[in-house]
Image 1 (cartoon, rainbow, N blue to C red):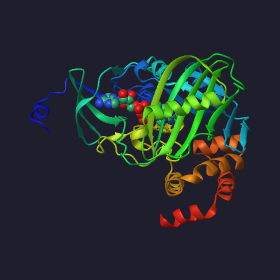
Image 2 (image 1 turned 180 degrees about the vertical axis):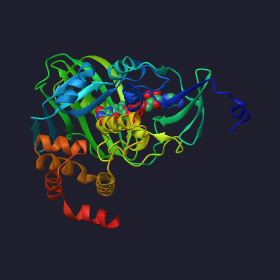
Image 3 (image 1 turned 45 degrees about the vertical axis):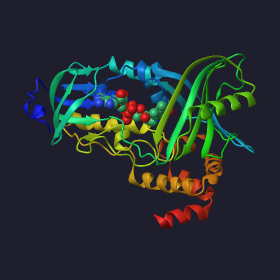
Image 4 (image 1 turned 180 degrees about the horizontal axis):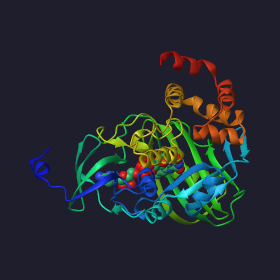
Length: 372
Ligand SMILES: Cc1cc2nc3c(=O)[nH]c(=O)nc-3n(C[C@H](O)[C@H](O)[C@H](O)COP(=O)(O)OP(=O)(O)OC[C@H]3O[C@@H](n4cnc5c(N)ncnc54)[C@H](O)[C@@H]3O)c2cc1C
């Protein structure tokens, strides 16, 4: 701790401070009532826009409708030999605009909950609270929650992608189906697929997504997208935006392990799929409920059993990357649409799990189970 920090007088005291107003931070801030709280976030919603997708049940479809860019009752996975199309009764695969979700949440903060558009600096934690500075002011909070992005190991397994949102020259075929994974692309550098969400018949989000331990040059993903568009006879009328991201698929290290973490920093990213939005929503709902009863303990976003299963899955992928496509296709084939959605959401039933386990190549998985 520096002398300057020692000498600092906190000018404002609050019950709760949240570092980071992204998916977890702003959701928690929006749910807080009858407390004084600050959410500290340097970027505007537009500056950090991207697409957040989830399998939404009917209540979530309503809850998130203002931020929804597209939603599909049908989705597909496809490789060179098979196309698996799921049609769900219970869930819609739903893509949200992160910017719209965050800005509507920012607009719903209760009295006493204040957003500061700045980075949190000079953070000093003491017990569950601490002091910090933001936008030139000093603050002190009885409870800190930290959602700043965690550190991701350089050679760790990651999901990395680059995508374009495009307007197409001609109408897209089957805009009612979301393509979750099209494996008919270069598989030489890791598990690679195209993800394509038709927002309407001439607007498409298309991403080249890799699961591997090394990132590619941006042009590599761009070429994969161009090749896929050519194969599909889709011509670009206008490129409306580009988004890129890296999502951890191994345990992450929080920026400061002395502060209670929420969201991705607390391990909310599903290690086998990179999905986190639903786990974050569930974690934050429980946390906000706890806080209203004086319990500030952050609930684990994902059960230890599920983390264990995902780690085995990832170890199989690292040891035998060639199994990635057959394993993903076998999972989709073994389950119906609702089972697949539950499985991806981390709420698969025992029957869903039994179906998936029976469909897996046994020896590679047993090898990894025995090594764990
Ligand atoms: C491009 C991308 C797309 C994704 N798509 C999906 C998806 O489709 N579905 C899904 O389930 N998951 C998705 N994920 C994974 C996960 O849902 C997101 O990473 C999600 O944003 C995690 O929420 P979070 O609140 O933990 O972190 P974030 O949303 O990243 O929020 C952390 C915030 O901390 C802020 N911050 C940084 N430094 C400071 C500081 N010093 N002081 C204060 N604030 C600071 C950042 O500006 C940021 O807004 C995606 C991830 C990425 C990167």
